[in-house]
Length: 263
Image 1 (spheres, rainbow, N blue to C red):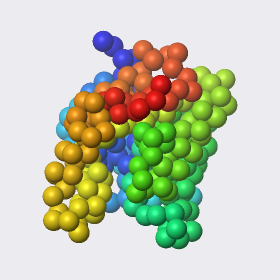
Image 2 (image 1 turned 135 degrees about the horizontal axis):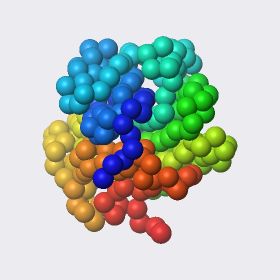
Image 3 (image 1 turned 135 degrees about the vertical axis):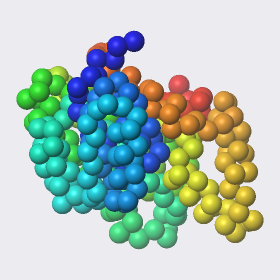
Image 4 (image 1 turned 60 degrees about the vertical axis):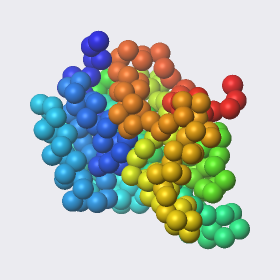
């Protein structure tokens, strides 16, 4: 199936690992040029080289922190310099949290708001003009099933991801007049390094069997009884970026192995 992505420019935050890296490879395989953004410079360069080796496309990268206004501005400027703008923006940068409402300080709430909500806002604000000039584009916001079905131990993550879903809806309404489609994706359990980190934290005081914790969590919560691979999730992202999803506007898609317990 021709996805119509050849020659497109895709900007992917959190692109050095996990879902972001898997989507980068998926888009590159379809002929899209890639601009990766992440904080860890060494890991980012390894990811850039990995994607470049996987397909004959241009792959560039910038190490910066999109949780800051300065980081977002630097990313937008670098994309403009390298590619003259973007056709696709995947707001994927994010991380799980682990706290209680009673104990979490204001600074932690602010950090996650900046990372999950303001980064998407600032990057869209910076890149939408070039998308409009290029005839349209796609923005995908990687939220979480926790936006609708929260996990008890990460209230800040739950709240900020729910806000990201609402941001996606309002972006979609505003941007579609310029032929820019915006959607959100709510993945369920995906075996990313971030999930492994969280599992290790939660089992540190009980023997450290993080693999057993992961297996049990999937069996208890998802009818499919396993975590997804990043590549399984990436395939859906790539489809939503493509012309094949031309009527998908302002929706939130659950890719969760049946985990969501409501209709």
